[in-house]
Length: 142
Length: 239
Image 1 (tube, one colour):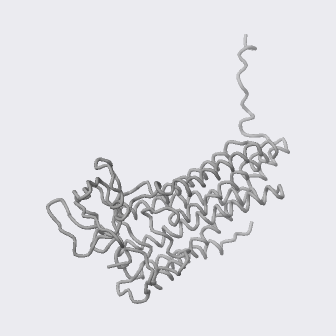
Image 2 (tube, chains in turn brown, yellow):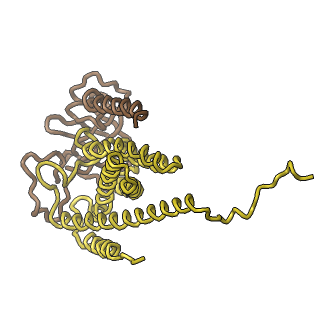
Image 3 (cartoon, helix red, strand yellow):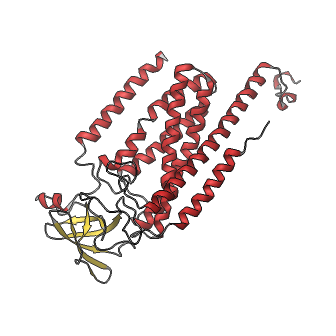
């Protein structure tokens, strides 16, 4: 056991440092997508750099064209118009969560990759048994 | 040897009940029938947590007592856990393709679950690489303790980092985010998978005990093995 102590202590220390770094230092850049508020706030987003934008598809904003769709992704404080090239996944709908990947030029977000984001709520068709709390997260339904 | 089949029978019956419950629940509001994948994906993930948690208990138990039964518990549990961890990823990929639109993406939960799979696959590999049972038990016990650090990290990854995978629906602060139908069916599924785990783990430990007894007997007695009749050719002595 004593010989392994020389392996165990550094391993534990390494794991702790890596975890702490991930949790506290990298947490800003380790997000899978950015919210409309964050993208709007960043004036200096490089228009050629690819990034992911996530939020809710604003109800009433969807315009479907030939091989492309235009819609608005919004959170509580900001909204970003999106032009997506390609056929959206089956579960794409207004009011639903979505993550798009592409470029942002300050006016329109042009995406070519769309991923549907589902929330943690599972509800039946009538939806009456479960009533979401007032502070329900975004994407709580239609 | 008396056959103890009641646990296997109970696990089988519960699996049938799970299938019935999973098919009986109404379609989910946004995902429709795809939500039924929850009744295999979630309990499989739960079993991976449970199995690796039991591996932690077995590993700590071995390090404290140095008794081989703890090592058998840790090893058997890890083997079942790796199977269900792999199943979780496979089912999650099918679910992801049909709802998210992609088989795989570099989301924190997905990456950490895959890392957990390979760490415990490495645990099983480590055990195969050490011939001496005592050294094997001791070294793998340390890995069994260290590896368990991942369990809470994997579970809370969806809370700590903003990602694609949805946060927990059941083990979370602020109540279960699920209608009663889904909740009941999921409870049945979790119970069934836990029974399957218990049945598989028991078989594993029986096998491990039998293997140890055989190894001990082969070592203690001069048992003639089949290959003993054949001797290596001695070229140097041939004229």
